Length: 471
Image 1: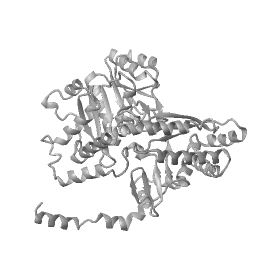
Image 2: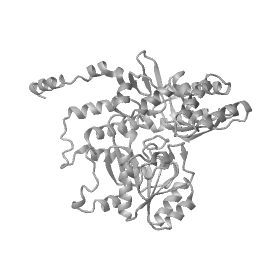
Image 3: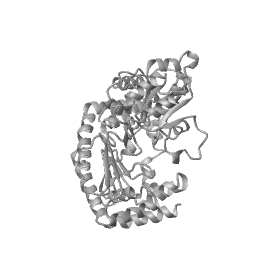
Image 4: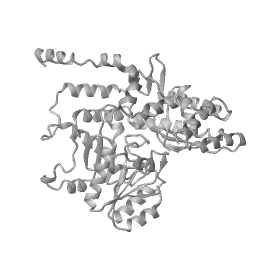
């Protein structure tokens, strides 16, 4: 950079001071959201006591203005796979900005997208090509389009309770009616129960199915596909000339203890795979649809069709640099091995508590994707309290556990879906024994309080009043 360029850049930068803006206006954060964004978000946060003010974040922790640390067991719904502000990703982004690349010209081939595709495909040896978009829902949209085009069939099958995104195509394969209500008409898609091969076979016999899209472990409820289901489904689909789409937006990139969730089952080779979230490094949104060579060649069958599926910001240099840095961190820091070890430690220690607490029904999951499910207690006194919550709204007990974890123990978690008595743990993949100890100790304290009729139930009454008022 020349002296003149440096001076010009400094002058231009002086016209906008982000630090000054934040210093002047950051205290208005909840008011600004109420006025200009989703007004229900701050209302909800105030109601459940989640209206914290976090000043900074690093790794698996947030920090408030007083320097108190908060353990993040949510990872931005899985986005912060390698933790917040990883130095390798930060450096990569500084480097790519300083490189001043001729990005997004639309009529050239930059090296970074090809390099990231090469890295991703090295973990997916049966796949051949990648399309880069900007989010998980975009990755799913691409897979749905590709499957419908190459098969010439209109219908996509999905599993009950599935979540694949909220844009119109991905919403069509969303297994929760609460997200779909009021947005019809959607695509002609059909739900089948997760693990039900007979239901899948019945639908395939109709001859109009393009694909089945499935999460190896469903985010809503943390429900894993039964052993052998993915392989059997794949064989059924291929027999009927339909495709298997694996939605790895949340389960991919090490979350379950394998690079992809489907790799837990030998022989499973999806035709299309969707990834996003953790690939971003928590900085630049990115989604990817990986597929077999013949699928891409049929979609992009001629030069006339070169832009038949594209994204304005897809393959941008910042996103590609972040993705490459994330994959480098995963390899160099042995992140997947850490997930296996730490995930097993966390899951087994929580599972050991099921005999101790009446309302702890199940602990399940794989790697660092763990579901803690609560259920109806046996003792009369606890049963009456449980019934009070259930009568107001299913899912209130799980929320009643989540709140003191944050308020008393400074641990951020959340329920795994609406009307579910399940807490989902999807922490950064870099946590270790220290974080496991902290979470298990805090969870034990909250469950002791809940079973002894302590302060947790006072908050439960508040939740009941709020649930009734919102009917």
